[in-house]
Length: 86
Image 1 (cartoon, rainbow, N blue to C red):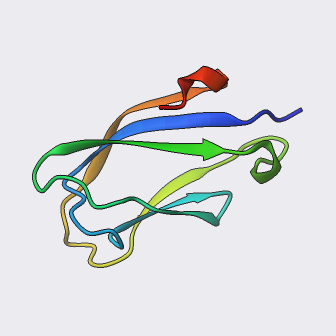
Image 2: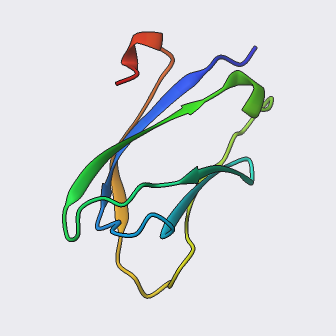
Image 3: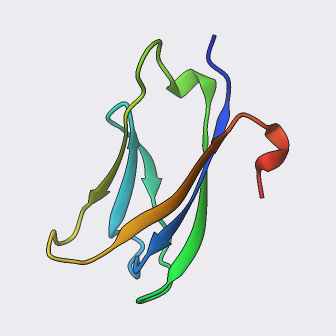
């Protein structure tokens, strides 16, 4: 049985609110908010049980503006602790 989980991570150099989209099972969870140019910003997404499927649940970070842009994510944490939400 799936449970709601919290995905927390740092995004690097995401300086446009339409630059990087997060997908779960091929469905959009939304775009990452604009962060810090050449710096890190913490992000958090709640992955509801209803959005998960039995087996694998692939997450994708998709550059939606220009594949030549440099960006990244680090410090990924997945938690099913409901108090992990910041």
